[in-house]
Length: 329
Image 1 (cartoon, rainbow, N blue to C red):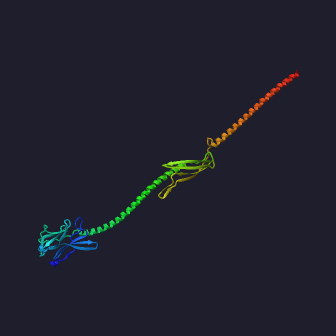
Image 2: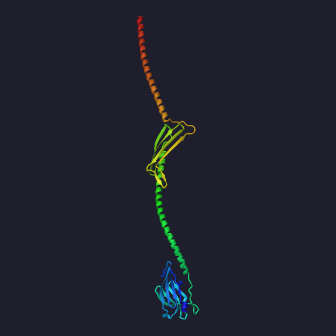
């Protein structure tokens, strides 16, 4: 009988569990022979070690034995239960309890409604054994996931830093782009103020200015009349504050333009005199006036001479009459 029970039971009667005093990777075993001993096995990596927790004093307890399969571990109480058998191998109905927390033995009778007078309790394995295997696998998976997450967190931290830098760069680029667009608008406004055609002279030049959203530009350009139907123009403008760079582009501080104006269809004579025509007309009027004044002056001189001749004639006439009278006498 003793030889029958003389074995070291390496199967787990207690499993590691959360929120109990038992540690992870810890199991409990019983040496159920002439000497009854309780062991704790601890797994560390690939090494398993056994530590004896207690020895059951058979001599002081009528040399009883423990039922070979009648034991279990109550995780909620952190206690080991063993079914008692007499020295003759008869089930007594009592259970011995080893309190892992208090490191003490006690005997108890567990009530049962069985009709068997020699009942042997064989523990039905719970899911804990499978749970340990599952938990071990899950822990390994979680360890791998934690490592992956740590790497991902490091990557995300780097990405966040990069994104922060990119946001700062984009903010700067957006500001520069806005200033560049404002400068371009000011350049365009300055260009539109320049002459496109030359109506009254061969060449016409002008200076233009433009302003938009605190950006200011100045432009200079000329237009030339090639013929009655064709005018050409060219010019440029410059915005103060310099060019603006954004990302991969740049809005320059200067712009130039050139254009042709073609007149199609019948040319309509202007109803108003041009500056040159007015100037020529004024000159002609002045010339006519000068000539008229000259004619008037000449007429006045002729009239004066005529008066002198008339006076001379009158004098001769008077002298002739006097001579004639004297001759008659």
